[in-house]
Length: 392
Image 1 (tube, helix red, strand yellow):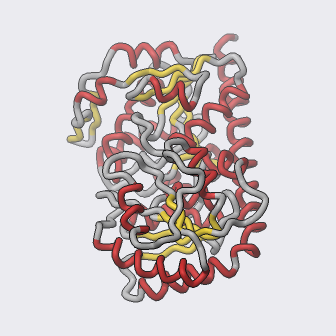
Image 2 (image 1 turned 30 degrees about the vertical axis):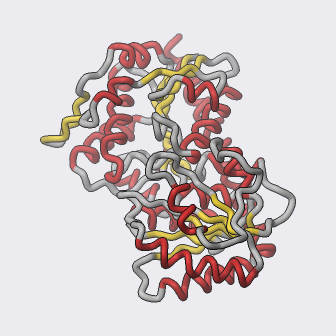
């Protein structure tokens, strides 16, 4: 079996993206023990570091030009596609898009690229699958048209939350019987690394980026409330950077922690690996998350979260996690006129109820892991049945 895997971030500069890919590749390897798995990346060294048995397929044409696609007249065309990528699709037994939230308006270019690659597979009569995805309604006409052509052809579509994803897929023409709600793939990795009891710190993450809607002015608002709560509870502030892409989460977390004497990087050294971030998260009693996977890594270990949002993209992500894990995933908007007061209240509430919240959060994580494993088992059966039919 030869499998070509698309992924969320070719540069692998995001610990959440890397964790999803690691789990996805591991699941494929367990199902197809002798599979040859190729992972599309822009750095040949990184998949070997995180997925040692996978084979990197370096995406150089994507790096050469940011204008990869011509988006006009409701069409998406690949510009400068290299022969190697076409050959990889041709050689593959099936092509799979692994977990992420990239088939959406917010990440138009990457979503278009993935859909175009999947369409190549369909045109070559290769089966495709889309797993662990966060979907939102698509308003860009070209991206929506391409999704309507491609996604209904998927053997299976794994959707990481039930709140918006299923309805969006049905509206795009996907057969409801092909849609499964699995939770995020990285839940499995984080849950596996959980500690036996709640921690003693307040985890801190902030995403300042064009797609999060958060700017540096929010740092001052958050810092005051965070420091006051941390002093009240005698808690260390623990940095939890997820994105390493400049400007990185670490840069803004450093600003948030500035002036608080009991801020700590447990374990020391660089937080340059998903497992290091997950381990650091496990030392927390509550996590303040400005990014999706900072929240996932906490909730999966039974740790309450306050998700902070400024954009529809992140509001949908955090509300999706709330639907998967329950109300111990608190969701707040920076736009709320009473934000500082509500943030302080949510922090205190999460701190006081952390031990009671833990069993329910872990149970929800277990259900999502079971659903994800079952979805991959189903995918295996369908791909094998299709292959057997072709051989006959």
